[in-house]
Length: 334
Image (cartoon, rainbow, N blue to C red):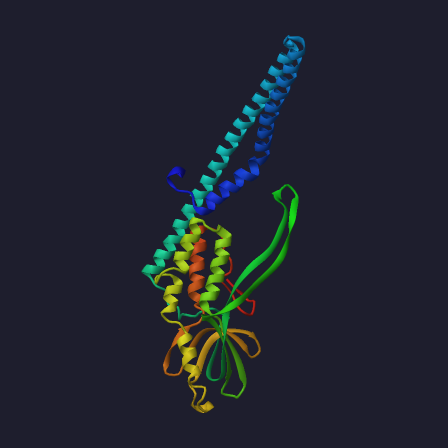
């Protein structure tokens, strides 16, 4: 059955690496045997040629030694090559079995993606036990913090022997580049005033950014280029039926932008805000759900849906997965 499942990019990479690292010693021996045999043959032929030129006779001892050494090196070369072939066959079988397990796990992930498509989650549902509600907040200041995309060039020299036993090398040069702000995937910070006149800092993380971070953790767990990576991408990221695709249909950025347009009004006339979130420390909260006077509540971080998908994945895959979310506060949510 393994042969019917093409190797994933991860499996191809694993195969090449395992063959190289496990067999390079035997390949070195085989090549040594081959060239030693060739060298010995040339040496004995030259020696016997000189002897024949001087005496007009062929030295039988030279022929015997030559034949023995050629036989020794030839047999050693063949034995080593057979060992390499057998080990390479075993490695291929090992990688094919791992590839098959990866494929089987990816089908379980795909079943979760199908369930998500057939029963889209309610991203507004918030039952996380540590959630705190706050109402009647008035926005005072709103700031956005874009993600930075770094692009750079390296110029310089590399020297040394790389990837061979314990030898390394050195790199000399400089990196030139710059960062470009992503004006779409931004985090939002709001300073608000509650009904008592106290200030409250609301941290509204960008869900796409944190979902991408979670996806990277999963991919690291299951391997870049694996069948599981493709399945996780379809579940969380790609297409309108993915979790991100569903989320983008109710992006809270519309609320943030609306509130910005009302900051010129007197404080009493600005729309009231209601939120559900987790307190980082006194006066600072990570926001999971935000509502605005006259507008529907929208999810900032759909924590319940994330946790439900994680539980379903853990049940299907029969293993624990990384926490679903790392918040700006450093708090892990699982």
